[in-house]
Image (spheres, rainbow, N blue to C red):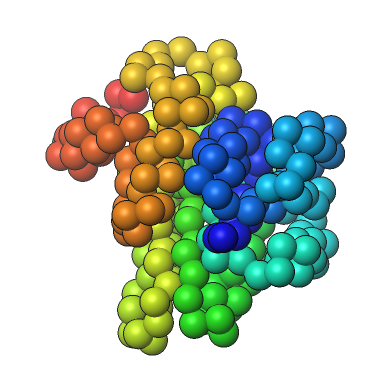
Length: 239
């Protein structure tokens, strides 16, 4: 039976993915800041889910918790780093940007490095990072979010290239969701092709099973990605 850890599983994609993995006979370790949500999810699947409270912005503590969860599970085959925040910041408030950077860049990197080291020593594994379609362009109301997700994608690419040169069977998957019905997008205007968390989780699971390097969620967002990469800069400036 495979074992997985999801960093950031108290709601949205992380919670839905935990349920999806359980349905496919995974033992799942979940983390998040809200213990009540973790307990609720664990009680739904008492034989399949373990949890540890974790705030990735508290980096040393998060690393300790991550390894404690691995010990609780008796090892891990799959790590999904889903924890992330997005805060609109059109007025360039440093404190807002700092909060996003700590979680989306520093916290992500710390857990990513720990998982990578673990899989290298183990000689196998699968690391998944949740980036965003926003990684492809700088959003005028949330430039730090776009930049942080571009960092996630590029960091994962670098890790993948490192693993390839080591010739170790470790898979690195970059997931770029479009709009998914989660607390992160509540109240946003102009959304389209909004997928449920359950549909997103199913397609992420399918990408994991196929050991994809990259996946857009939902798949139709691949078209939007192609358009973004093709649109001239002077048009993108209007968004």
